[in-house]
Image (cartoon, rainbow, N blue to C red; front, side, top):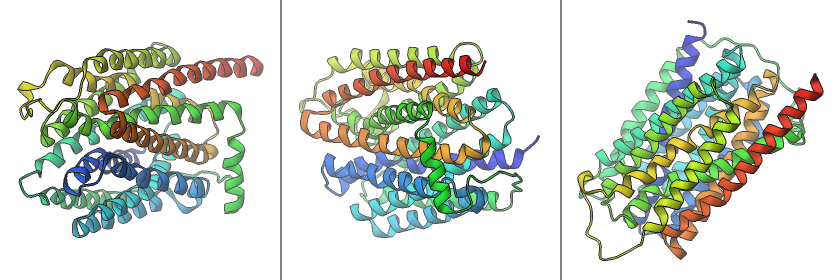
Length: 409
C-alpha cells in the first residue's frame, strides 16, 4: 500500500499523544485530591498545555516543511519522554505544569506534521476527509485508553498513580523507534525563504474571509469539547458522587463516543452534506445538555457510588454527547485544508491549531471558574453559548463556500 509506513507512523504518534494530551482532566482531578489545589488553580493546567501549542504553532508552522516533518515528530517524542520522567520524580503540582508544558510544545510539532502529511499522502478531497476522520477517531481511542490506563494504577498509596508515566515512557520509546526506522518520502514547497516570510504567509491566510470563519469555528468547537472532556471526571465525582476511580472510568464512554462518532462521520459525509450533519449534531448535543442538567443537583447527602451497576441513567446519557460533537472538528478541518494548495497546509494547520488551543484553554478555564463559583451542574450550561454561535458560523461557511463556487464558474 502506498505511503503505508508514514500512515502507520501518523496513527501511532497521534495515539500516544491522545493519551498524554487528554489526561489533563484526570491530572486536574488528581491535583485537587492529592496536591490540595482549588478547581480554578487546577484549571491552569489547560493553559500550560494549550498556550505552548498556540505559541509553537504560530512560530514554526510555515517553517516546518524545511525542518522536516519526521525530525519534528522525533523531537516532539524526545521532549515529552523527559517531561513524563520529570513528573514522576517531581511529584508536585508545579511539575504537573512542567509536564503539560512539554506535552503542549510536543503536540504542536506532532499535529502540524500530521495535518500536513495527510495532505501529502492523499490525492482527493474524499480521501483526505476519510483519512482525517479515521485518524481523529483513532485519537479518541487513545483518549479512551487513558481513562482505562490511569485508574489501573490507583490505590490507597496517593503516589501510586505516577507509575502510569513509566508505561507512557515505554509507549513513547516504541513510537520513537518505529518512526526513526520508517521511510518517509515526500516533496513539498515551502511558503517562503525565511522565518519572516513564513510568518507573513501565515498572517496573510487570516485575512481570507473563509479561512477566518473556519478558524473561529474551530475555536468554538474546541471550547465545547475541552470544556466537557477536561471537567467530566471531576463532574462525575462531585455531581454524581462517583468514587475517584469510577469517575475516570465512566469518562471512557465520552471518549469512545467521540471515537465512534468520528469513524461514522467518515461514512456519512459520503452520503449527506457535511453542513447538515454538523448542524444536526450540534442541535442534538445541546438537547442532551438541556435534558440532563436540569435534573442534576449537588448534594452532600449522597452515598458514594463505586460500582458501575449503581450508576444512574443520567450518568450514562451525559457522556453520549461525544457521539454527536465528534464529527464536527475533523469535518471543519478537512474542508478548509482540502480547499487550499498543499504548500499552504502547514500554515493553515498552524492557524487551526492556534485557535483550537486558545478555545480549549478558554473553555476549560471558564468551566473551571464556573464549577467553583456556581457548581458543576450549572457550569455546563455555559457550553450552550458556543454551540449556538457554532451553528451560525457553519451556516456562514456554507454560504461563503457556495458564493466562491458561483464566482469561479
